[in-house]
Length: 433
Image 1 (cartoon, rainbow, N blue to C red):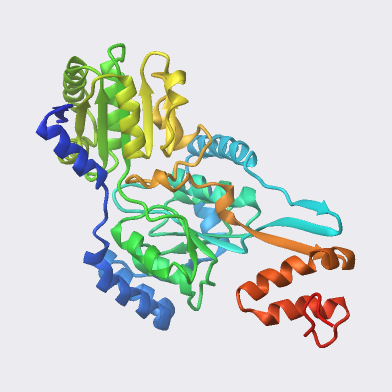
Image 2 (tube, helix red, strand yellow):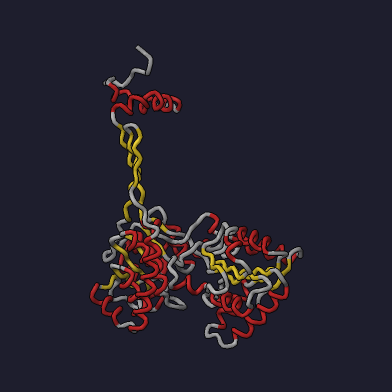
């Protein structure tokens, strides 16, 4: 169950040290084999992907890229009720992400036109894991923002794609499906094979092999982030419903044995009540073994002095998911500066964020919210600066440009200005004869 530690004790200090370093993936452990997988797919193409799939998954791939008719037919076999639920979730996700669409803009200033041009990426690879569970929701959360951005080619890579996952792909705007998982799928998306054209960027969650592969192909393609285990921090005061708090902690703990379910409580009695509720709720939870392992490995209840200290600790940890189950949560929301997503009040389950609220559930983990953001439309576009001078504007700014160029010892830069002012050899410095 949760390990309860109180502020001011040695155990509390040790817990904070561990949590600052939480979720670090042991990428070095798998890197040698991941490098071998990437290299083999880069040179061996489809056959290399088949070989690694045979080795890791024990199955034979008839074809790597599914033809359009096949995967769409399989998608249509998903239960109609689920298809309707996925369509409604996609509608909400699309509506939210349309708020993020950037428009071209420009500034005209005395003969100088400065512009910002926004264009969608030409192609994106969406990775969806297929190990302990299927995640059609992750397909929606990755592909819908890409479609809103205007990406014309969206490739889903996932092992043994189920009708549910394929239904989500069709609804979200996926244009191609690749039946492959693991590092070999990342390699196929990054380098291309006989049947898969390479993409510009790869997004989506995965295990340590996938994370390591994404890190290694970065530079060949863009990536969204290196995601670690999922995590939630619930801040609870004396008015919190311990049963609701426990339910939210379990909603993360059941994801994976490596997930981090964390409680920050203002009273020891709150922590005790939540632990009791966790025991009760685990009794009939289908994934109880996974959730119990998560709680035992990574579950903490940190007892602090007051809510001010709780919020300071949240900003230090930078959680992926933060649930504020306190009196007047809106007031404390204003003081949260570092979090992937904040769920405000006890009527806002993290479940809503995972499925249908609207914002993408692909969030920075392990404290990466200090410098990272949720996946959004901004991840699927490029920005290009546009600069135009007329002759009069260049003449007015010539002295400034030449002075800065010569300060850096770059005479060629200065002469590129002078030649436009009528000095065809471009060698006359301002003020010289």
